[in-house]
Structure formats: C-alpha cells, structure tokens
Length: 250
Ligand SMILES: Nc1ncnc2c1ncn2[C@@H]1O[C@H](COP(=O)(O)OP(=O)(O)OP(=O)(O)O)[C@@H](O)[C@H]1O
Ligand SMILES: [Mg+2]
Image (cartoon, rainbow, N blue to C red):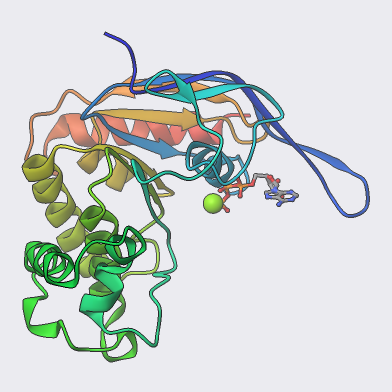
C-alpha cells in the first residue's frame, strides 16, 4: 500500500535576515498511510511546524519532495485541513459562520452550509453556541470550533500543530478523548504535533521522534497499546520514559 502522504529526502533551509542559514529540516523521509494517527514530538526549534507547513502547502521544500496521493504538494488544498495552536477564528463572525467559512468559499448554498456546520458543531458538543462570538467562548471551546471548522471542509488529512498547547490539563485531556472519538467516527489521516510525550502516546498509532538540533527524524515508534489507553498501564510509562530519554540524549 502506498502512503497517502510521502515525504522523500525533504530538506528545508531558511535564510535569516542577517544572511545566516538555518537547516530546519534535513533529509526527512516519511510515509503516512490513510487513517493513520501520527504524532510528531521534539524539542522547540527542531522543525515540527516547518514540516507541517510544508505538508500544508504553505512553505516550499528546499530539496526533496512531498506528495499527497502521488502528486506534489505545492499549494494549500481542501483535502488537507489545518488546525493551529492559536485558534485563528475570525472574531467578527459567529461560531456557526466560522465553521461554514470554507464551505462559503466553495460557493455551497447557504442552507447546505448551515446544515453541515450544525452537524460538526454538534460533533464537538457546542450546538448551543452557534450564535456566539469567539470572544464569548473559553479557549477550549474556541479550539473545538477550530476543529469543527477544519472537519466541515471534509479534508482527507488533518494537520494539527500543538492544538491543545494553550489549554489547562483537564480540558486538554477532555479534548484528546474527543479528538479520538471524532477520528474514529470520521476516519481521517491525522498528523499531530505536540511537545507532550504523554499526549503523543495517548493519541498516536505511531510517534515520530525528532532530533533536537539537526531537523532530522530520530525514530518512528509504533504505539501498540490498545485504545482507549490507560495512563496507568505500565507499558505507557515505559514508552514515555524511552521517548524522553531519546529526546534528552545529544
Ligand atoms: N520563516 C522563517 N525564517 C527563518 N527561519 C525560520 C523560519 N521559520 C522557522 N525558522 C527556523 O527553523 C527552525 C525550526 O522552526 P520550527 O518553527 O519548525 O520549529 P518547531 O519544532 O515547530 O518549534 P516549536 O516547538 O518551538 O514550535 C528554527 O530554528 C527557526 O528559527
Ligand atoms: Mg512549532
């Protein structure tokens, strides 16, 4: 089976204002299969967001290739949805109008648009907040709206860059559960960046561990703990300590 996303010998070099070159990614090779839930972990500055931006078609590779269903990713597409850490909702639009934004761009008739948006609003448990404005919602609720908005476009792949990073521990755990439930219902391919090794083990089929400095993949680890995962499972703790050790070395 071919990967839905294929990354081959991908490198990204940024030139900073002062002319200094930064190797954000170096020779990344990765195959992501349909319905996979992949987490990427690694310390700050190791290139996680750069990789996601390239997968989203927002940045171009310096060398190597990145393909979606066999075709190079050169610009953003409806098949690949994005959720960033900052909720990025439009403050002047209500919740329902934020969710239906992509459908509006797509010239879908208003009634259809609203029906789809309502369906996803319900999926994230915010059906009572359709008419609210983003500032009237908590951070966790705004993040749910951002997830609903990404899902409403029915992408095949969902890229998530530390989507729960700004949330308190309790809300974070609730949204992790919710994301897994949604993923099981909708069967998307998810690539999820996180700083949290615990979060990665809770969510992922496979964890991509990045090297601290070089912008390289250090290891890809399969998480063979049945879902729903119990944090008290000794395998869970063992895996966490293995990954943390990997991130410490170097
Ligand atoms: N637009 C840019 N111009 C120049 N350098 C950049 C640019 N974007 C990122 N970089 C550099 O590329 C490297 C990787 O950045 P990136 O944002 O991908 O890291 P990250 O792993 O997402 O970090 P964090 O966990 O802090 O979000 C960093 O050294 C950063 O300074
Ligand atoms: Mg980042």
